[in-house]
Length: 95
Image (tube, rainbow, N blue to C red):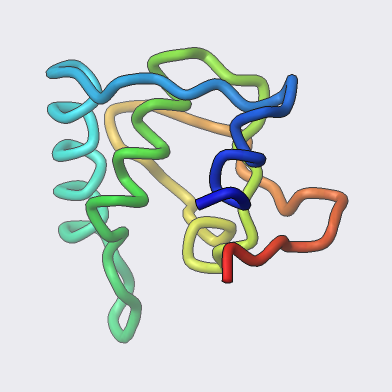
């Protein structure tokens, strides 16, 4: 738990509550992902869709992730776009 708390004790991390806007947009992103995914690829998972939806609603400049499935995300549907990139740091462990 201490490592988890330390993550949110940084300037560049903001914790926000999931609200209806985020949940609905996450569902739309996941639905688009299911419909448009190329054969043999997985749709975006709902927890990841929540993160992406939150980033869109809060108009972030870039979404940083080590998740290759999100890094390869080409389309969010309905003309939405989001800069998704790998961070310039090593991945930390909560374990």
